[in-house]
Amino acid sequence: MQKYLFIDRDGTILQSPPPGGQIDSFEKLHFYPHVITWLGKIARELPFKLVMVTNQNGLNSPMYPTELFYPTQNFMLEVLKNEDILFSDIIIDESLPEENSPLRKPRTGRMTKYLTDETADIKNSFVIGDRLTDVQFAKNMGCNAIFINPENLRGQTELTDSIEELKTNWIKAATHNWQDIYEFLSSQ
Ligand SMILES: [Mg+2]
Image (tube, rainbow, N blue to C red; front, side, top):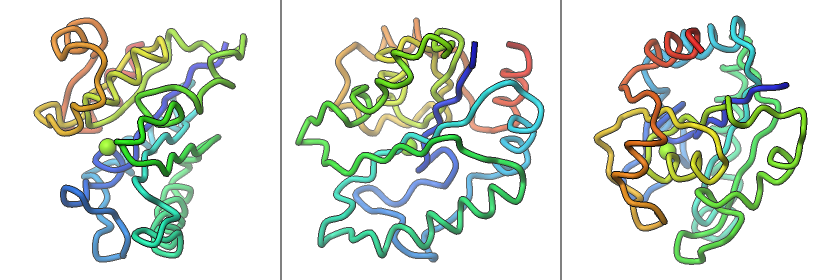
């Protein structure tokens, strides 16, 4: 059975853009501290496949054309690949929160191939993300959540469960740093 890490991008691998903004230029591209070191160890040492799952609000619209997204996205992937951090899949949703798309995280419309794959060990897989919507996504997937930057309360509008329910039952680790995530996952 294959275990997965479903990893958010902004605020998790990269530092968050300002509220309402996007990482649409190299000036806004900053890696989360020490992510390369510890995600590299996770990728090299632990039996998880890595899948990036990211909401990019309004991507491929005049406000956020793909030409502003892919230069930094591709640079990030190249930096990570040089440290053996390879994603077996990259899932990008381009909708806006108010559209309530079934394909948008925390909903699981784009995850059917994993949820129906009998060789996928979803129960022992993890979502890693910096918002409660990532925790909600983990619950909706039927896996557990690792919450990075757990004081972050942005993005609550898309929750269907209470914060208490999500925190109590679905967050298995909460931390500000990737070393803790490596150590937690090593013990699984
Ligand atoms: Mg995020």
